[in-house]
Every structure is written in structure tokens, then in C-alpha cells.
Image 1 (cartoon, rainbow, N blue to C red):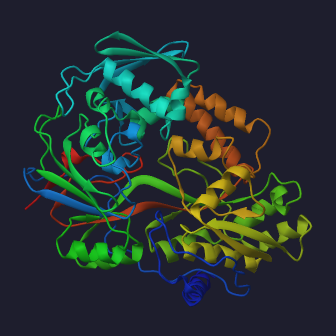
Image 2 (image 1 turned 90 degrees about the vertical axis):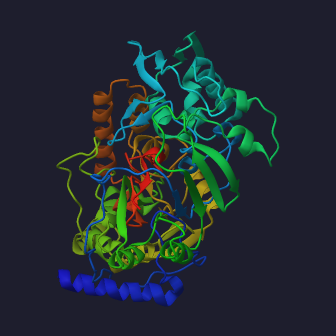
Image 3 (image 1 turned 180 degrees about the vertical axis):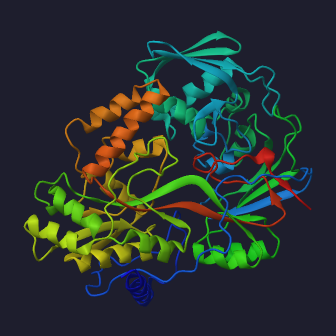
Length: 548
């Protein structure tokens, strides 16, 4: 049975190729544009033969035994765009591009938990109505301005006033009270657990020099005048959607960085990126496809996977009383219809994990013992029959241009095998965002997977303006609100596990695979680990060095 399943998946991949979708793309970056409507093949069944990696890619930062060396320029490539380089207040949102320049108020440990950084400690009041941060002494911005409580206050107020991305978390702050130069109190309207998380894991926590921010700028000089932080590197030039350059900060408060300079390049074409890597014009390429990764590994390059998981799923409109998916048996049938393990092996080529819930065993919100609705097409058909659909039915799938086409076609094919025929509506990213917020009919198949950390999952499942057509039992949103108001981390994790179980038991959505973005590194590169500490685009520039 297993061998047959894998052989038939290979046939599905041939179908993907024949309909113009044969070129695979990185799972967490934009894929290829599909047709406006496509009917799924009705008689072919997925999964695949697969070649597993000869050496498993690292999922934790490697232990370095050699003595770090100073000097050199590290160049790395991604395809995520470089649209704005300045301060967060100016609208710059690229965490990976800003982290060399700016330090966060807090940082994260390997499990994604908040830890001290610019703030050496913080204390939540017993009633949850305030958070007091004690700041480190002696830190200066690149322009010589002192880092202090006034700088933190100015940044927070300006971020909220400019309504930058993520600033909604600051809405819970009633006022900022400067106790003294190194102590600042955030007086809260109500406690919000996401506030601490965002200060540690997102650009909201990045503090810029208030002296620099008060300078008038133009589009031409904004980066030069406002990209002034306390970080290990100093802004040294950029070109929109092409590159950013940085030079080492010799006075960095954590110690002098090993590198002399860093260059981050944006190259949309992965083939061009790989050519540049092989030509020694770069030492790393981020977010490559498993096919390319395996080929490069055979040539001696190092493969590395971030610690942050991206959960791929699709979402039926269970909240629509006229939809077949309002019946939990139909939602269960969806999951039993999908051969997740064959998809993970055939598409992920050994790099993807099978997902049955919105967490993996090493996550604090993982629920052990949950039933795994493994591939069982006969059970899927029986559930459909019990729900009144003995011959199946027709429905829509709404997705967007970022989606992995091989995954989408595989799901369509599996559903067709049990009688669920799907018509595909391929939206652009803007329309897909509106659909997620305003609702859909049938199945919503997000083009971009959800990172499995608190603020990402909360934004997708714990917000009133997201996943609006999903079935939600009475009190579901109230449970999210209670989680947000929980200052005790252990209790918060317990509440989070309860939500994980509810989402699984009610089959609110169908998770089918999880992947950690795959990066390729030159052998001489040391200390570079992208998406470490279960945080989107987190890396530590000061720890990177070149062994040559």
C-alpha cells in the first residue's frame, strides 16, 4: 500500500509539470502564478519516490570549535525584497535587514522566550497593570547619543503615533513613565502578553537614536540619517530592492564584531542566486527549495534549517451554515483524505515534517496524545456518506500566487479521490488578504504558511479580522483574550495548549505539513544561523565570521 501510494504521487507530480507547475519553489516564499480556475484531476492519486538528504541539515546553531577570526565581508542573498531601510518609525519592516543596525529592547532564547537585551531586566506588576524595564548603562547609539529611558519613550510614542506595523500592541499602553535615566515604566490599560513578545521578536522592539529621528529627511537621505541604532553594524549604503551594506561598529556594547562588513543582497531569481554562490560572490543563500538543496549538498555546501517552523494548512468555511463544512464530519473527511506523510516526503524530499496540529513536540503549546487523522480514504468517504454526501460534492479553493503549486495540486487530487471536486480561484496577494479578513466560500488555502510562534498564531487564529469563515466554538475568542491577559508564562502555555486542542478537536483547519526554511552556506561561513530562536528572520550578525 505504501509503495503504491508513493508511486502514484510521482504521477501527480508529472501532472503538476504538464499543467505548467513543474518548477518547484521555496515553500515560504512566493511561488508561481496559477490559472484563474483549474479543476483538479479526478482519477490520479498522489505521493512519491523521494531521495533523502545524505546529511541532515542542521536545525540548531552548530558548535564551533575553531577560534573565531576577525576580518572579511560576509555577503548573503535572499529573495524577499529590500523596500525600505531607515528606522522602524519610517516604515522599515525587514527584520533581517534591520537587525545589524538596531538592537531590540528584549531578545529571545533558543526556545523563543523573551530574555534581557537593551533592557537588563523587567518586572510585571502583581496586578498586571504595569511593566518596569531596567535599562543597561553605558550604551550609546552610533551617533554618540546615550541610550536611556527617554530614548525608549520617544521610540514607543513615535511608533504608535505613526501606526507602524505591529504598533497595535502598543495600544495597551496608557502612558510611559520615566522613573530615572535607566528605568522606565509602561503603565497599561490592560496586560497584553503579546507586548513583551513583540518587544523581543519584532521590529517594534528596535530602538533608534532619538537625535537621529528628529532630523528632517528626504526619501534620498532618510536611510543615512535615520538608520542609527545601537547594533553591531553601522549603515553604509543601500539600493532599493538590490542591496544593503553595513560596516562594523567598533564600539559595540557586546564587543567588536568579527566581520569588517556585511552585504545583504536581494536576488529574486534563485538560479541567479545559486550561480552567485558558486562564483564566490556570496557565502549564503536563504530559503532554497529541497531540490536545489540536495544538489548543492552533493557539491560540498552546507545545508541549514532554521528553528522556526512554518505550518502549512487549509481552512474550510465551517462558520457558513449553508456549507458542507459546517458539519464536523465533513471537516474530518477532509483530513482523512490527505496523505500527509507522502506529501512531506515527495514534495519536501526529507526536509518537511508531517503536521497534525499547530505545534511540534518541542513547542511549549504542543499537546501530546492528540489523535492523528492519518490517511484513510475509506473513512473519509464513509464520513461524507454519514453527513449526507454519498457522492461527494463540488466546492471552491481560494489561494494566492505565493502558494506551492505541487502541494496545492496534491491536495486537490486527494480530495477528488474521495469525491470532493474543487474549482481553484487563484488570487493575488492583496485580494487573498481581503478574503482572509472578509470571508470566503469553500476552502481557503493560504499562499504563505503560518510561523508557529505566539504572535503569528495569534494574528491568524486569535484575531477577529483573520480566518473569519472558520468554525469557532462558543467562547473560542474569549479564550484567546484570556491568554493575552495572562502574565504568568507557565499558565499562558497551558492556555495555549487548550487552544491547540480545541482547534484540533473541532477540525477548524487541516494542517498538513511543517517546514523550516532551508538555507545553503559556504563551508567557510561560521556563526550564521537564520531564523534561529524560533523567530522570523532572527540572526546574530556579531557572531558571524569567515574561516579563511
